[in-house]
Image (cartoon, rainbow, N blue to C red; front, side, top):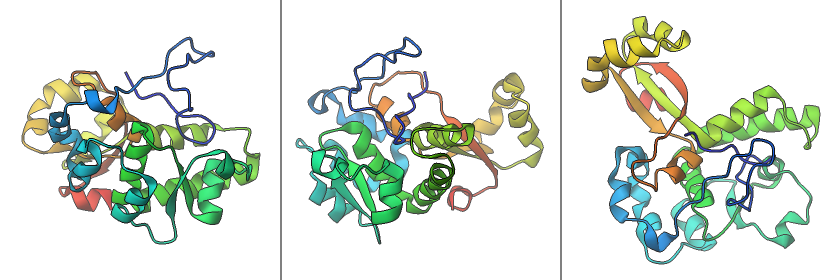
Length: 231
């Protein structure tokens, strides 16, 4: 199952346990912090965020000050999402662009993973924010076009996949999954195809439940070096 897209602010709705009235599906509910096995963070899915493992495994939730200290972002900072912050009436993305304030719910897995991605990949998050703001300026904050939906899906569930052999790229474009995953299974084993990084914070959140089937929204990059493909 894929991570559920967020609300119109590009984030999961505050009531994560509520049913999605439009689809009849229920949002994923992350387990309480005390019930998460710290061993799950050794999964390769979390490799890019190993430097921040203490934020994930400590007994207590990190507060906003801890996030800003551990994840310093030039020109931006994490701000507690409360009534005082939301009183400005700004869209989540617009607030980031205008004031550098990243609204963050405390004691919340979804927003903690969002903060980690900001800390690890600020250029990617900034690019997504800039594109979202262009569409918001054109359409207003209460509507969302297909481009915004795609941006949100990548923000929530994004994965960057590295493919060494350019001849394999048409298999992705053509959704020829049997060829890609079965006929070319050896390429996954020898590193010819690899997950360079998981960007989607909703995908990271769902990985808190071991064995859960996850589906990412992939951007495929031709190359042989993970860091170069992510840059």
